Amino acid sequence: MRLLVTGPMRAHGPSLLSLVFALGLCGAAGAADLLGPESCKGCHPAAYDAWMQSKHARAGDSLSPAQQKDARCLSCHAPDQASQGVSHVTCETCHGAGQYYSPSYVMKDAELARLVGLVDPSEKACRTCHDASSPSLKPFNFVESLKAIDHWSAERAGNKNPRAESPPPEASKKK
Image 1 (cartoon, rainbow, N blue to C red):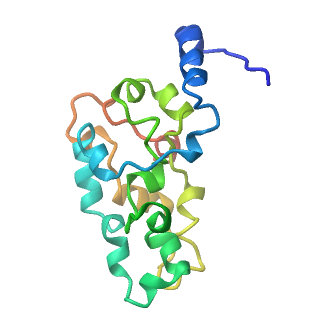
Image 2 (cartoon, rainbow, N blue to C red):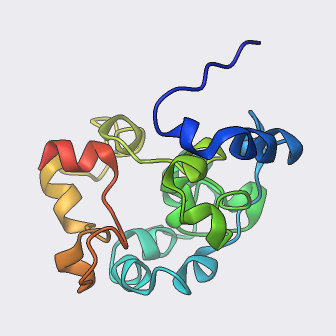
């Protein structure tokens, strides 16, 4: 495998690449462990509060007892229940398991965080659950739905620093 380092990553020099390879993270982010939404709350309290107010935070509760045992329902309402015991749609359901990107020194470097597993959700990712085959969903409007779950904009978070919780690249392009 040949790795070409260009652009902003070059500023980190060998230390960024050394860190990634030394930790054995290259390609392993998909195997990371979930930490749970409480682990996100410390650094992202506004995002956590927005999530707590969302339907995602209560997705598993919206299922009947029979549906709570149906894998077809759980695949969207509690996708991490079987493997991690998480019974709702959490931060990591959309942003990827946080084991490798959650340390503050990693989160301060957006490029490194994405390199080791942080996911910027896209419309395609949302549509894996919010699609025409969903039994009780109304038509899904990505742009409007994105506004309803906004937990990254400076205005929503009340931050003076808009980079504190920057939007996913796909979100900023769609607005």
